[in-house]
Image (cartoon, rainbow, N blue to C red; front, top):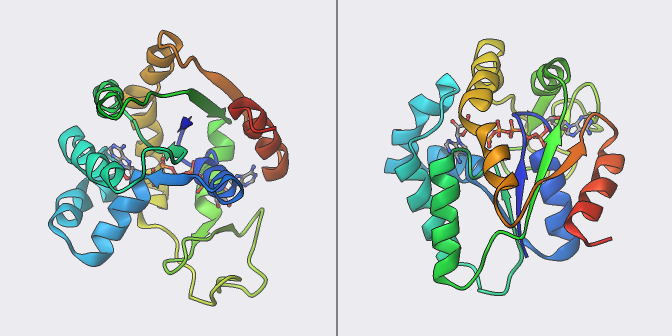
Length: 216
Ligand code: AP5
């Protein structure tokens, strides 16, 4: 099963992908997480991506396709995959179809999460992430038990640099300009698009997400 989670910044793609990946034993492939790891490790890719990410712009397609290709090569052919934050342009979507076809696979389902800009801005301003284990919290909706500390591993939580208000505004524009056209792309694709209203509780969204993917 190959699933794409599509939707604007802060809509809850990562939150939902982690939960489904945990329950089904599927791989969670987040290009944002892979890029942030590269930044932390100081790799060449991380240095190439840093300026784009901090400005809220997309990292060039060629860099992203190399990253995804390398990551997919390390996954077994049978493992279910949840793509989170990828593809983000029609060039990446075409690239993904080609890469999957090389191993006889295809995109099975595209789930579009939707919420208002006001909700997205609030979620991103309140997001806190654990740099060690990747757990995600929200000071408004899902705070950690001890302020500023990860419940799972105790590390100090961070506010992502690209969650600063000016950068969030740019990320939302970039989504509309470069990623929203993927809805039409996938509506014309054999996978189709299933819409999930994401402005409800994490549990309620998760129920609709599972139904959309067909895992009950
Ligand atoms: P990336 O890391 O992919 O960021 P994004 O797509 O902007 O998405 P986010 O991680 O901000 O949000 P999310 O939808 O995962 O929401 P989350 O679950 O965290 O990309 C970052 C940057 O990397 C890009 O700007 C770009 O530069 C680069 N990049 C990455 N991929 C790329 C690609 N393919 N091509 C080019 N460049 C690329 O939830 C958000 C908050 O809301 C959290 O606090 C969470 O706790 C809370 N929350 C979640 N669900 C709910 C709910 N139902 N109710 C209340 N709160 C909720």
